[in-house]
Image 1 (cartoon, rainbow, N blue to C red):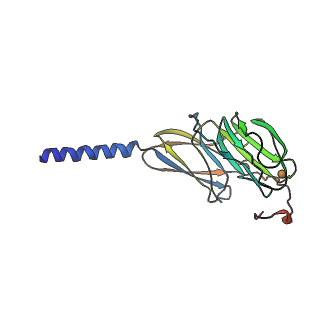
Image 2: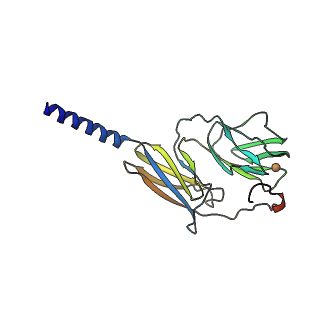
Image 3: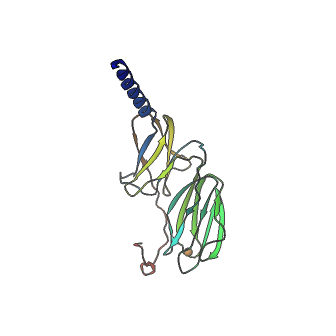
Length: 216
Ligand SMILES: [Cu+2]
């Protein structure tokens, strides 16, 4: 009896350890500017082609004459809705290589979402309100995230292995070079810190009187 108890404990222990070892890992990424301050809205992704996951309801809203959110990351082939929640009309457009489109002056919901079929950066603006800017970053992977106010983002469910992690920010000043780091994911949670060199970006002036609900 004792032998069987021992054997059972040993087996359970072995299974627990193997389970723990094969468990997928998370990668915590912190993004800082060149003055070591955290940066919000940085896109972080694993640079490899991975299957598409379903993403039916991606929305870039227009509220109080701003796009919300400022940065969105989607997998190639995703559709994004651009509802206008203001009581005035907007005209959304992009001249970017990855996606050129225009939603002529409209209010409410446009008739169809916009599909993003090429990977890369898509910069959008409104023809009426010069300060309205937003970015869609289209990726081929399903492992991506965006940094929060503390500059933090987490990539979850990573199997063990070697990965290239890429960081991009609307103000990145890297030219054609990607900001990358190689990382090996093993049984320990990994942490990476990226530094993004920022270029100054023109933002059209907005009268404070025109701001209703938001602080900018
Ligand atoms: Cu507008």
